Amino acid sequence: MDLKALVRTIPNYPKEGIMFRDITTLLADAEGFKYIIQTLAKRYREQGVDHIVGIEARGFILGAALAYELGVGFVPIRKQGKLPGEVIGENYQLEYGTDRVEIHKDALSPNQQVILIDDLLATGGTALGGLKLVEAIGARVLECAFVIDLPDLKGREKLESAGHKIFTMIEFDGD
Figure 1 (tube, one colour):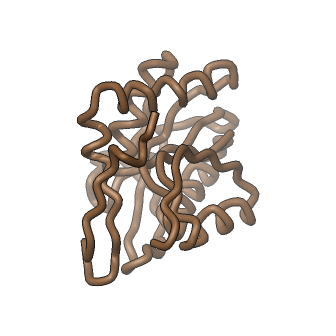
Figure 2 (cartoon, one colour):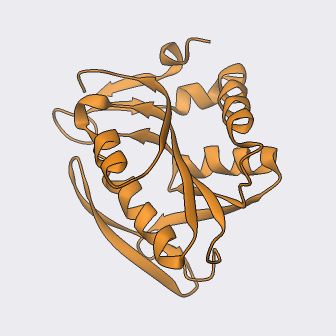
């Protein structure tokens, strides 16, 4: 399946010079969305996954569908101030600014095995922030999964150099 053809590119969003890779068009395509979830489920079904951890916001869509398919729980990582319970947080760098992500302190247990998922890997800042949160709780990230990799922004290198395994489905060069 040509997943790249289902991804919309929006130039200069959220700011000048950014080529935003929008997966909402891919998610709206029933066969494309099904292909993504089935591919990921096949990859992780026999891995002993306890939870899928999704990063706000598109990681929620992918992560919840994958968790359902695998029959495991889903845990959200949200932007600062969005979770009602006791949280831990991590500041991180974006390719176009800074932000903070949080997770409920009791969302995972030590030694649980998780897959961290989001739609896109750019500089790796958001994912690295999420990884630090999961690890602070004591859970083990088996792999980080992304639909899109932007290799020119070196996010994969950053995460792999921190000791994490990465799985991506498609790449867009030059962005």
